[in-house]
Length: 322
Image 1 (cartoon, rainbow, N blue to C red):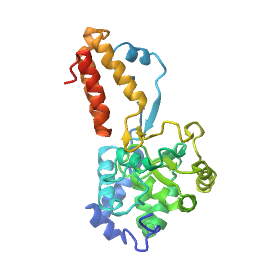
Image 2 (cartoon, one colour; image 1 turned 135 degrees about the vertical axis):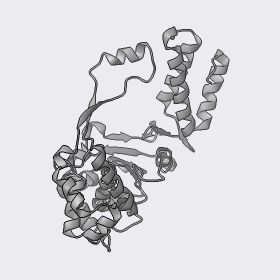
Image 3 (tube, one colour; image 1 turned 180 degrees about the horizontal axis):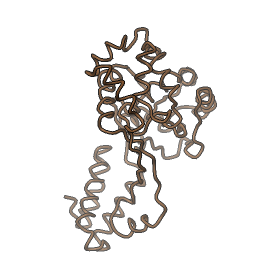
Image 4 (cartoon, rainbow, N blue to C red; image 1 turned 90 degrees about the horizontal axis):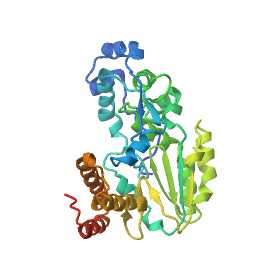
């Protein structure tokens, strides 16, 4: 870790300091807090359909849609939360193993850390329903104990960054608070991983471990989370051996570099073939080409060599990827 938690100096020392940082008088803050129940407009967000237009997309549309609840703070509260993030939470230096919702960190960089262990074991664990299970007591702990704010300040900041007793989905402050909370309880996992010679990273609630005998860390992770009111999502737990394809936040670990996942490459090759053989509905061709170009551009952001392979296939098939 690159910082010691809790902090030795309060991040916000007084109500006057809070007013200065947010550019808002405390009377306005109290008025906002008093109207807090009406400052959220929850809705359910449907997961995306199959990415390719045409028959496969229509087929996906017939299946029951998976939805996720978004708590959705209204613009007035969201503006205050952005100020909290920018003027307060952004000052917290997070551990180097944290990548999700951290400025300057990327999906590609997250995977690259583990490339050296591509031929070793990899364990993926996920905290079950992390945001809904981060309670207002957890959030107050972050503000008061971890970040050292005096009780009146910690209470106000907790009220401004929670909804219905939990960390809200869709609030600008939630990812940072989630990261700080996890960093504050993760010491047993860090210590056990260091002793075992493992590489560890997190992407908010996704926990990754790679190296020899990586599976041995799992009980320490489970116990650490349980001691703080969290559970591991059993359906998202993965243990991958040396020869298995290893995906980390959508990026495959190659022998020397991050690579595009095999399935994405297979799907793109199939998409190029459908276009080359005239199997795309004429009404869908323009959307199909745009979608294909966008997905290939995503592959280019992971590994330019993988895009070269796709372009060669397209050239042989007489398909333009422009």
